[in-house]
Image (tube, rainbow, N blue to C red):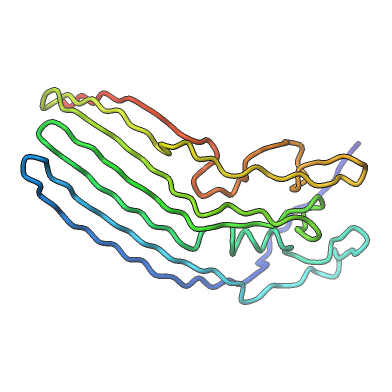
Length: 206
């Protein structure tokens, strides 16, 4: 089997993004219990399509479902596959040679439509719910030039939902995005697909 294709770049849509961002910091001294630097960041962004350009007549074909330049899946990539809301809260605690850095990131809901033909028409709407991702690091300074640390990114090992299966029209099923990987995590996850990452670190300063 052979395949011949051509790729042409075009400005397929106009978008507009509105948003706001707020950051705050505060320090607390707890005496013999240590010192804590608090931080909070809140971000909101909404992207909308202000104009969607049509598919050129020369390559339009209803017979093969090629009728629009950007289908539902493509427009979702621009508007709903990135969370509108993101909140980051942090606390950095120090006491003598000890320190701990705790950070929690809350991602808003995201979604995308998929179908076997790649257009997003007649398929399924997938979504990743609001998710909180916690990072934590605890460190101890053995000397002024030597520090040990253990930590975790995505401490509670959160994973995005898996791509759902739909009928393949022949009595079986296949992934809704038309790929051949069953059970793969939704790739547009704002916090990645690999789950928790745990580490130990030795830092020597000279």
